[in-house]
Image (cartoon, rainbow, N blue to C red; front, side, top):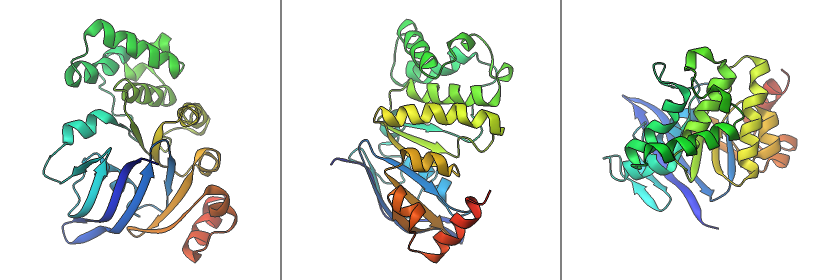
Length: 245
């Protein structure tokens, strides 16, 4: 197995507050990892450290064989090959859907516009909204905007996809349309790290589920073991609350 993301003894501080404590995790190519845990447990911070939206203070992170040093080294490479989908879409409101999708490939990969537009339409088709290409984000539902955000990330042809609570800002009826797209990506073999509270998604697609609490990885297990026989009392408590809703 080739390791796509390696996180070793990572600490992260906000001022004097330690948000990540000695976190270590390996994600193999093609592996689907779901990270769950209560609010404030460090889940989003961890995946934001992978593409250096947040800088870690100690420990090592390597992505696709390149070590991130917190000084900007390899950052262009990382952001080119690691796609990220955010909780709140982060689409440019003044640009059409198509323009949102072609911007990064044209700027960072120097893809000619015609080719970038063809790729964008391919991925908008993939997330089932090609007819929205010439609309603006404000004209779309939340679920549609999140599917655009996924298509935009895919236009860079990333080797790893990070999802930071991609359904938490959506109305319940819109959640399934986004999860359906993510399930499809998982089935195609995309390497994925997903922070989510969607336990059904974790059961369906995860190769392993990670539970974090207070900045630490408390438990890591395959989904069948994680849900049926969690070893840690804190994990059991979390699951009893989450699965009761």
